Length: 163
Image (cartoon, rainbow, N blue to C red; front, side, top):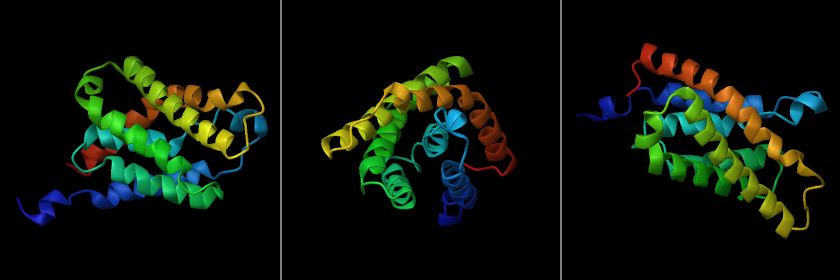
């Protein structure tokens, strides 16, 4: 196997991460914004499931640093959360792959909940505790969005033969 074969589809993976970062920064009405899925976490989870040897903890860490920079948050808080999501996904990818979509959605929601709790914990120890329980809503939004994210990214991966 040459380097061209191992780098097949790298551009598509990168493009999906850029789109996820853009979706994360869109301004939405407050009612909808509370349930905004963690698009970066969802896309990271998909690619870590599909390509666990190419997308993992390092990818999650870099994406988290980019997200921290884009949102103006404490550098490293999203990086820790996304690296944890990537580690959990790669660790359990063989089990999660065989689940039906609804069970995958529950697994993804639990990973996103862990990420959200890490981010809230870091905010809390830096003096910004959550004001209410709405910080638990984005993992629910992610669980509802997972089937569509999975189907769209799977079809793109197949169409462009990303392996």
